Image (tube, rainbow, N blue to C red):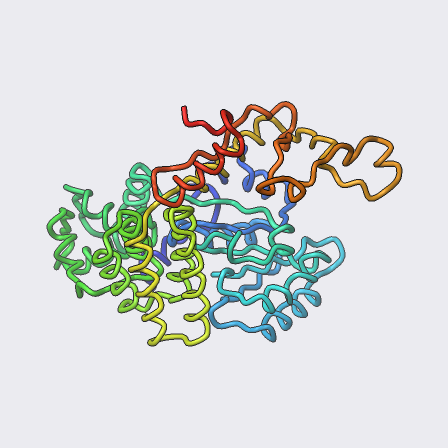
Length: 424
């Protein structure tokens, strides 16, 4: 018999639990389905929140050919073969076939390039699913042709709805007398993952003899007794461990950081996933307090990419300890987010004329580049002139933090700019 999660896979949007911001009344994906005009998009979210199910529902509702590829097992040849099949299955007046790619973040650049033409020409409507940020993992030309929709982990009310739905409608469970006394452990272990919740429920039911089943925190925990080294790199623990790893680096605890690194290595985590997080941490958490951290993290990423595992654990460990023991600053991270917030609010303010390029005579006549002062012609390679738009001339975005490197940067800015950079 099929597993419980497969038996309960929703067939229509009305059976679909969660993601109401996307599939609820009037929401974007529901509107696309109702209007029968589905454009290419990527579903980004943690495991078990309904990415694959949603793609199948769309295909079934629109009654279009549905092709699927797994980025783990498919190559460029498989992509081309599916595209040819899609071409031959398209008939005049019919909707475009859907190509669903699970774990699209694992597709190489060449595999993604092989998709691009078919998506551009409308040979297929691409629906991708990923647990990783598409901005980092999907090539820009492909990403620009797809909307990205973010799916969220199921909240407790949605998990309760799913639990009751399973007990009352599943062909096996509804023949039993199931008493739910406690749900804390069940929901905690599922971690907002619908598939994991149903798998745990299935396991708990099977562990009790007869038709009378009682669900308590204790028997859920007992049923889930596992090897303490178990690491589900596609599930909740994947996110828990990487979160603990990054927070340990941010908190300057090299022992904890190395421990969580070891957990990931022993659990078979993708070493490049770890290396990417080190690069992000070097920028976000160490930043200007120690600019060498980004260089070392990037070097570790390159080394792991070149030598692979198990030797790759050594540069990963080196970068981990270095980042954890470095001084910390998030001033650059805060500065760019503050500036982005200002840009969203103020719009596209005009660049001052004197710092615009003037490649044509007309631009020169209009005052482009006029009175621009070349910094290298002045002492200390600095001249006090305006660079920000007029409307933003008094705005501040970057503020130094208290570490040896940024104290020097602050002193230099005060010496050059005077009151503008004085700390208030």
